[in-house]
Amino acid sequence: MVEETQTKGEATRLAVEDAAVELFMEHGYHATSMRQIAERADLALGGIYNHFKSKDEIFEAIIVDKHPYKKILPLVLKAQGENIEDLLKNAMQTAITEFGREPYYIKLMMIELVEFNGKHGALLLKEIAPKVLPVFEKIVKTRKNLRVTNPAMLMRIFFGMVLSYFMTDMIMSNSMVGVLMPKNPMDIYVDVILHGVLKTKDEG
Amino acid sequence: MVEETQTKGEATRLAVEDAAVELFMEHGYHATSMRQIAERADLALGGIYNHFKSKDEIFEAIIVDKHPYKKILPLVLKAQGENIEDLLKNAMQTAITEFGREPYYIKLMMIELVEFNGKHGALLLKEIAPKVLPVFEKIVKTRKNLRVTNPAMLMRIFFGMVLSYFMTDMIMSNSMVGVLMPKNPMDIYVDVILHGVLKTKDEG
DNA sequence: CCTACCGATCGGTAGG
DNA sequence: CCTACCGATCGGTAGG
Image (tube, rainbow over all chains, first blue to last red; front, top):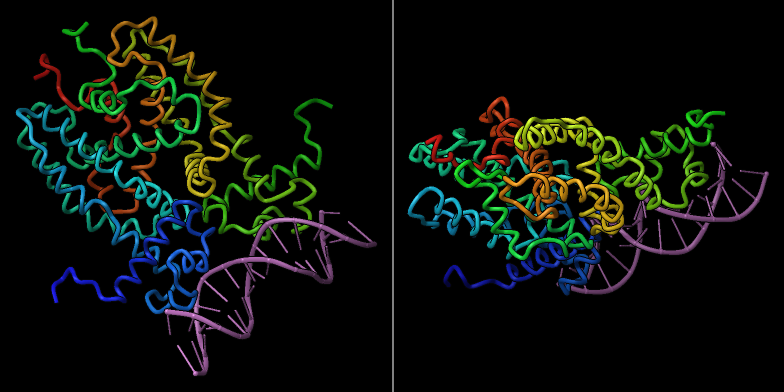
């Protein structure tokens, strides 16, 4: 029996998690009922409780199991570049592209902040930060031509950029303002983080 | 009877809105009950329905009435500067500072996205965009030394920066990573939007 | 503006 | 893993 072989119980558990992710994304946590989750997972209500003790436990499992950083971090770390500019540009484009493949997680994070007041978030950050922070520490140490020399701050800016990219997209895609947006917003976003909104003197 | 004189009915209505804002911020929309709102507003449950037809209507009223752009926009527009760099720097610092005075609104926006799927958001943007977009159009037209020449994109970046500043703050303040942060994160944030994370050649 | 109530639905469980 | 059920609580209303 290899690791990838799923027992029936594991499959059911996954079905519940997947159903829950869908519903949480559509209506948030508290507006989603256990009965809805059961129905979408093709299970009787009581059946869920063979796999999860409570509704809260389902959310916790999702927040941990479905976190895309496990998938995305290795890809971002693979980013190559002749110089720091190329490197950061590739890393950011990879992060945005990969995050865009799993847009659900941005919403899960917002649910966590809105409906749980970041209860599980601290735990998660405790797991992720030690893996990601050293990457930025190394960048700051080996590359001298950075304006931002604090690793935690660079990490915050990097992550904040990804976050704001998708949140502003969510907000504006609902309205006409989206039409006024250029075709390549990602390129511009990355360019601004690298060089700012101002032209440098030699570009004037 | 001058405009500023509040009738008793208006005062009660406001008390309900204020109580609701507090509770929505603490637990989100669906986890807040009408009974909780009534209690915090010092009112019987039934009394609320003299002022609002439904729970949803309370949220709508809040999303519209309490929007801080009415307060913040004029202040941001007052921002002065000898050159475009000073101007933008002042405008951004004002926006972050003023937004920080009413941090509730970021959460309300997130509730709107998570629990209402942006239902009211489009309406709001329709009201705000026509007032804010021209400001960025004017900036792009009169100042030639900008890397970002699309007004909608510049607006998105400006707003995205404010958003990401507070969201990353919310996320990281719950953990130890916050300790590693420099003392003046706002200055660095603004600096990065203006000049990017990279040093320019002449700074090398 | 309050009291007392409505039907509906919630999360969760016992027992098989 | 399902059926049938529990008490609690929900948003909302009638009637005064």
